[in-house]
Length: 237
Image (cartoon, rainbow, N blue to C red; front, side, top):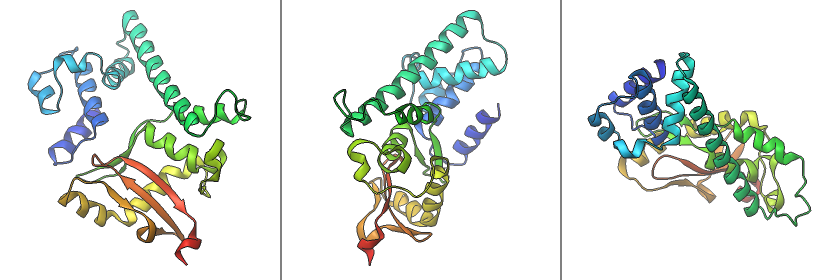
């Protein structure tokens, strides 16, 4: 119930909820109301009765609440497991597609690289989250995460991504680093989205300088971080 109240509070304060937050809120509300919800609430958040029936993220939140309250029936347990499997396969598919972009194929010398299992283990446990709280929130999802992880996390760079500039940090520090860089230009980001719905970007001579390093970043119209990497400082001399 804490998360439900928190999301409602954010919405009432004028915060633009991210899509996954809307899905969480509807899923939690359904769980607390025996699967019933006012159609006006659905409409307020851009959903309809038909659109929520097969929404995987919404169903996951629904069954998670029921599981936490020990209210899962045997049929619920079966469906909850199916939802988890679907999410697992979605992440695995995205991971494989990113490996293909890195030119890792069944004919690649790296196809049996044991690091792949380690990489997917962190992807598997990843959930979308807010990176900067404001009326227009900045967030990342599994697509953002995989993109950054395989291209710029030194221990996880594979294939042609090995030629890209790596972070001098561990994966466990990545989110905190991004949050700190975003916070350093918070007013600029807020001002940008208060005046336009266009992509926010800082590249080249406009790279963000933070803690002795320069960073390129790109945030799409919805507030999703779609690019983030460190820049070779030599180009700024």
